[in-house]
Length: 186
Ligand SMILES: [Cu+2]
Image 1 (cartoon, rainbow, N blue to C red):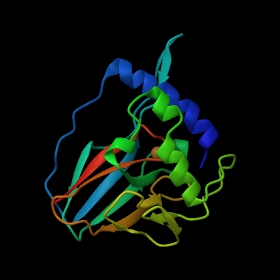
Image 2 (image 1 turned 60 degrees about the vertical axis):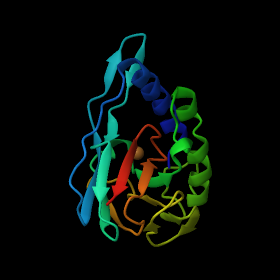
Image 3 (image 1 turned 180 degrees about the vertical axis):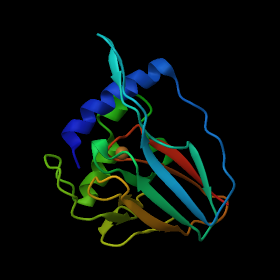
Image 4 (image 1 turned 45 degrees about the vertical axis):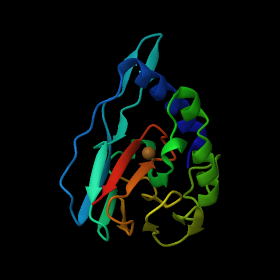
């Protein structure tokens, strides 16, 4: 996971986000199988001001039935893989400084066994409650995480969501900390 690079890009994007404001998401119908797409909107640049990264999740809020599955697809491979990582609501970066040095990202990237100076895949592709493992976690709480792959377009991971109905899971990408969205379990 390319820590060195994403920190720089993240800083630019987070600052730009403050300027432009955020979009309000729409809620979809609850389903047993939900697809979450990492997509890339065009990069925006204002000379001598900022460059704004267009990486994002395709929605702000997703829904899935308890016991259903989510499939996380990398349709934005220009900046490598992404992670689907459940975090505590308050652990998400909310400003540029927090995105530049994303505390929870550093902790969980380390748990994944990522080398910050390498593009190599992390030692553990998944985390269950913050502990590295080879197989997908049951998605129900902070620290459940998965890397979409090696950074090729179309790669995906699938997790079963075991959280009970009514749970709100807040997730983000550890590599691009502004990629944040919500998964409502119905
Ligand atoms: Cu990402």
